Structure formats: structure tokens, C-alpha cells
Length: 434
Ligand code: ADP
Image (cartoon, rainbow, N blue to C red; front, side):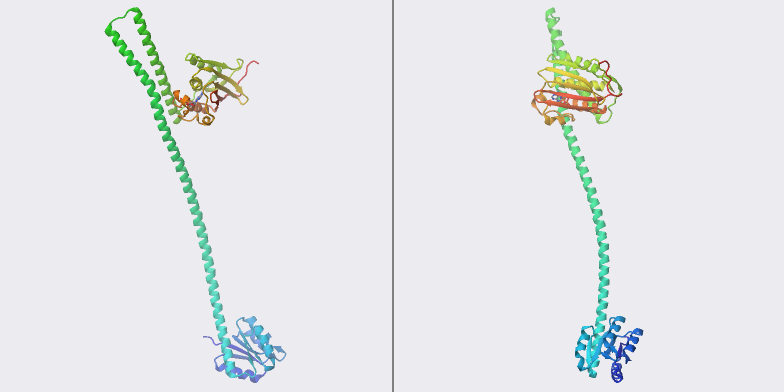
């Protein structure tokens, strides 16, 4: 261990020398200064562990020596020497940072003890300082570790949040899929029950009438040629039955066509062969075909006879739209009444087609759903009328494919109007004449 260094400052040479001798014997490296200026010079060229100074030097304040010592090395221990008469100034020195004081003339043992205590105090102080520095270092390391840890936690939290978001999106997607699958499953069940019922009804009727006809003909063959009047009656009955079979065959063919259309729509195979279609002319043609099927309904076509309402469209498909809307108007007004088909033009380069009936109507809550696949009204009256819930779905798909719009207005018990807006290919429909 390095020898501890002591600076003794006293203008009484005998005191300085004696104290130096005592302390040197205790193993300290002692330097003496007899004047304040000397002491300051020493302090500027060397550092000391402990400075022992007389408070009252010639022309100099001992406290200035201690202040200089601490400025040079803050851990330097200061001890002041003072006479009995200036105990008060010793106390003041202690307040200003001196470690201890010795009264002159001082006892050898007291000197040795005080210096030793001062040295111990300095050692402990330095040790404390060292521990404090270590603690600060450790604190700094902890702070850095904490920062790194926080950054890693932040990154991990961010990653985790991202994963949670991804998982949430995947979960929502899966839920949507599930929802769609459930919907499809429901549609499938609906389809099976509706299709089997709707297809079975005409087949049962056809098979029944064909069986009866076969039996009649066989019986007639066994009985031999009838009389003229009897033969005519039998032929008429047979004709009636064959007509029923014919009607049912047409119905069956229509149902199968609808199913094929749905299949084409679902697989994106609905083809459009575009030509210029005269809407009132096509409507009149479709209405003529429907007119002969009912005696209860009166079909009226309204349009400006001077106007030309031409759309660039697939004729067969527009015919299908008219067939479905006029067919429904008749089907859902079983008590008959007028059915009006109106063709007009709009300012938005569209041809507007509407089909109105005075039938059972549709509840407002159902209106948004009637264009859905397999949608059939739960109402008793509507249920009693046959159907697979495909007509309006196909109609809407056709209108959509022509970039048109379709919507319905209805009042239960009063009737329904379906509106179709079809864009014309070349600007607004051309109006000829006034
Ligand atoms: P459907 O084969 O059942 O007639 P649609 O798709 O043509 O199938 O019609 C769907 C449902 O919309 C029908 O079941 C019926 O409840 C209702 N609907 C369609 N047209 C009319 C109408 N003109 N009047 C009253 N209800 C209608």
C-alpha cells in the first residue's frame, strides 16, 4: 500500500518539525511548510491525503490552505491547529469542512490518534466513493439492460399484436367461409326439397294421365270398334288428358331450363348474344303468348307508339325477363285482373320496363330478399302457387349482366310492380315524331 502523505503547515518551526517527526514515526510521508504561501505552492505541485494546518498563520488564513487542498483533491482531510483562545474559530472551521481540530500545544497521542482517524475517515470515504461509483455503473448497466429489454418487449409485443391481428383476420375469414358453407348447405336442402316437390308434381300428373289413357285404349281395343258418338266422346276425353300431359311437359321443361340457367349463372357460363332489341315489340309478342293461357287476366301494353325503345341486348334473355315478370304477375294474381306492361325512357339513357299486377302483393320486409336464389315467400297464398324461387334470381342476373337495374314496389292485397331499367347502347332511346 502507498505511504499516506501529510502536509503540516505551521509558522512555529519547532511545532512543525516535532509533529512531522511524530507522524513520520507512524509511517506517514510528511512535508512541512512554515508559511501559507509555501503551503499553497506545495499543494499546487503535489497532492496530500491529509493537511494539518495552523489556523492563524502569519499574514495567512489556515482555512485558505484547506480550501486550496480540497480544490486540488476533494478527498483531502483537513485538520486545524488552534490555541485555547480561538476554540470558536475551530468550530467555525469544522462547519466549513475541516475534519477535526487540535488544541495547541497538542498531546502526542492525541495528534497521532486524530491523524489516524482522519486517514481512516479518508479511506472509508474513498471506499464509499468507489462503491458509489460501482453502484452507479451497475445502475447504468441495469438501465441499459432495461432499455434493451423494453425494446425487445416492445418488438415482441408488436409482433404478437401483428400475429393476433393476422389470426383475427384468419378467424373472421374462416367464419365467413363457414357462414357461406352454412348458407350453401341451407340452399342445397332448400333446393332438394323444392326441386323434388316441383319436379315430382308434373311427373305424377303426367304418369297418372298416361296410365289412364293406356288403360282406356286397351279396354277399347278389347271391346272392339265403338259407335260414332261413343268414339267421339272417348277421343275428346283422351285429347283432354293428352293436353294435361302436354301442359305438364311444358312446365317440366321450363323447370329444367331454369335449373340449367342457374347452373350457367353459377359457373359464369351465361352467354350474351347482343343485338338491337325493340322492347315494346318483344313485350307484345310475349304478352300474346301469355294471353291465351288465361281468361281471368287482361294484359295491356302501354308505350308511346311514336317512340323507339331499343336496347342493345340478348333478345332471348330479355324475352326470359318478360316471361318471368309477366308469368309471375299472372301466377300471383290468381283472382285475375289487369296486368299492365309499360315501356318508357328515362333521362339517363335507359329504357324503363314495368310490369304491374293487382294480385296478392309482397310484404315490404320480403322485398330485399325476393331476388335471392330459391327465395319463396313463406305466405300461405304465395306457397299455394307453385314455383322453385328461381325466376327472379335468373331475371336479376340477366338484368345485371346488361348493366341494368331491377326493383319492385308492392302493397299486400293491392298488387306489385316490377321495374327494370336497361341502358341503351347508343345514347338515349331515340324518340321519333312528337
Ligand atoms: P317462384 O318460382 O316462386 O315464382 P320467383 O323467383 O319468380 O320464384 O319469385 C320469388 C318469390 O317472389 C315468389 O315465391 C313470390 O313469393 C314472390 N313474387 C314474385 N313475383 C310476385 C308477384 N308478382 N306478386 C307477388 N309475389 C311475387
